[in-house]
Length: 175
Image 1: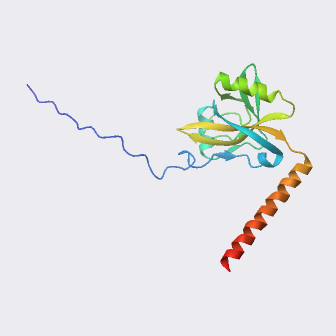
Image 2 (image 1 turned 30 degrees about the vertical axis):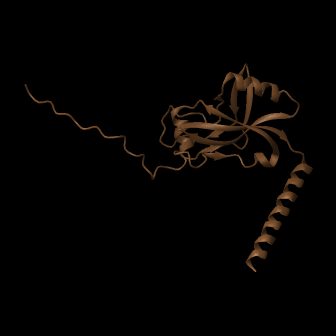
């Protein structure tokens, strides 16, 4: 009877430590910095995004923009509108449309809570950042209330005062 050769099994090799930080989930793929300037961000939620293959590759390459994007609840489903994901460089004729409406994935219970909150006057859903978590693209949505011009000025004044106070403390410590 011939002897069977048995290959010793090895544990899964460690992932490449030089992997792209965006794809590894260490850095955000896109951040909506203007959101905190234009809105009071009241509460934050995490949602998955239904994307095509070329969209995921573009997000991984850092070609996503959430500046004008917003969330909408229609027929008990959550949608992301006006989020720009640039076309994939190596894509073919099946490349995606940059501004298409994308479905957001959340539990039905969470969506029902959001319906109640967004029906209040002046509240909307604004995406604040897009990132990878366990290899999947996630969007952080914030329940937001719009700021008036004087609110923006007050926020800027407060930020400047805090910065000056930190600098004064720092200069005092260095003496």
